[in-house]
Image (cartoon, rainbow, N blue to C red; front, side, top):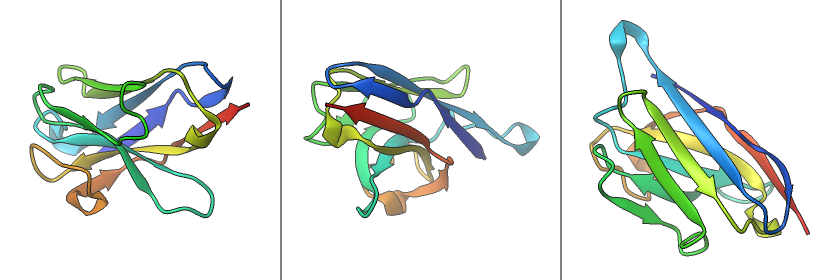
Length: 126
């Protein structure tokens, strides 16, 4: 499975961005049955969980720092996962990576995820 993240950019504080993650794989392999998540990593910091969604899209969870500002969603028919980011803050600046878990749920631990995209840079200026 290959994951391709896009949609990053530079915005001012208070602005919005929508990240997309496209999944593709050999022999028709898809991520429609996998839990998915977005993580982020800022320079000099550890990779941290941002948001996750289960295989059906009916259950989501968020890091406290992004709750009520970010929304994760997915379109299983298109093998796409999205992260709508509103009210962005300078501390949201990081490389954002999408990940696919080895199970239908996933969770917030990075070790539950087998597949990673290359990341897309988000920069928020004050």
